[in-house]
Length: 286
Image 1 (cartoon, rainbow, N blue to C red):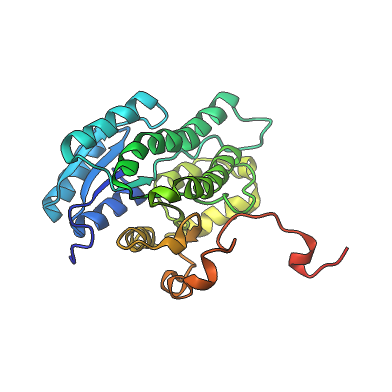
Image 2: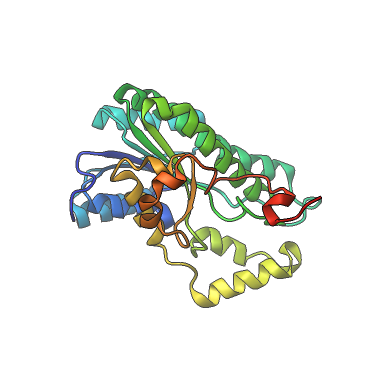
């Protein structure tokens, strides 16, 4: 423990398990005060107890459905009442949503997924923004996930929502930069969390052979390591690394330190962002 986040306050949605829990544990090890939010109270209680016992960290918990704006507001007010500030927001909570051909899925499930994944992110950002503006600093990290930057057929709700998160990340980075609030998207890799377990319940015909085979390979390999996203998140928030503002960074594939060393070449470019590809990008003249 180096105390890199001593006296900092972080809110982590979906913080009771999986990647959110891993980030909470990594931040607690560095002295961060935490508010972990999730829908399941039993998991929250257990995770908060584990982190407090292991790291002697101050951990608040709040049963929160991020698709419910009043739940989010209550969670934020509880954080401010206890800690008086918010330095970091990790928008991790998300739903995989309905899987299958667009003609067969339930449209209510589709739009509920968008409300959770997009709406929940917006509710959380709106709620923390006044406090970050007041302190003229802050970090917002959004989890982008698979399907944000490449096609992910048969996962239409999840893919559409995560693509939106990448675009909102860049928009917010521009909007909030004058307040010294940094916004970055993290792609955590193919980690075998509970969301992955939900995919195992779907039959091959529903999600296509290519997706099915990818799931079976992940099952056999154990998936990508869960500790990469927490290390990247810590790397981002432990120093004011403006070069990552508005970018989407892969926890698995990108060399973060090398990016920082070359920040003068990368900061004002569209590298690590989402853009339309035109013929000249592929050396094709039309």
